[in-house]
Image (cartoon, rainbow, N blue to C red; front, side, top):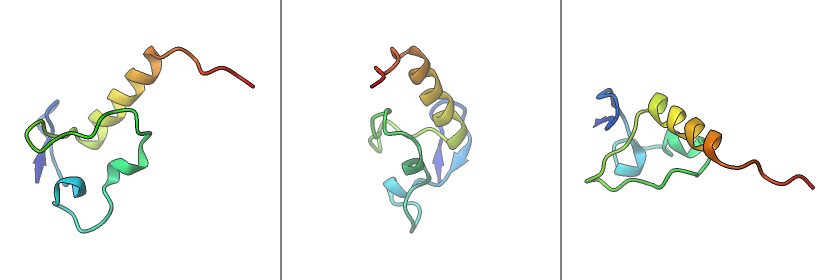
Length: 64
């Protein structure tokens, strides 16, 4: 099990080889760089908050 680098919660990470299925994080928008084993991952809740924060700080996309 992985430990969230933000809140300390334990969770499984397929990208680090801890699950036999595609990782849950692939369901999120790909705006956060994939971590290394040394850097660690965020749990689903913290990753969701990080993405929401990043999306809120980005300028709106132009409309067609």
